[in-house]
Length: 183
Image (cartoon, rainbow, N blue to C red):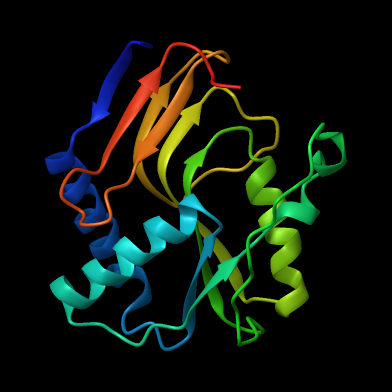
């Protein structure tokens, strides 16, 4: 079995979610001119946890939110050796003039975020786009993108793999770093 290093245990994970939600409240108030968009799949799970924390800790609910699939916006989607499985995009609103908070679980090369920003333009021209990410794998960026809201930055080698483990009940969410990337 592959040896994994625990980076963020469930207690620190929950504290990080709470901190990120408070930072959002500081910058977006009641969210009347903002929306939160999760990138499928990990970003959507993180967005749901952030929305839950905003509701429970700050009593803010009914925030405009959506789920964005970027599969066919990626610059490498044609390079796959097997059929691509896309997730669904669920956004029944336009982002025109809104402050968009884009959410993803791990920031690595920046290509996913670039694809998400490109896909987002199909829904209008936002006033601004901010990025919230749980983990930033520093020193691996291919595109100059950085998070505005950050759970934790870690230094990894290219062959390492960061795995966010989501628990549907929210009791044992954690982040681990594996020595070798799984194929």
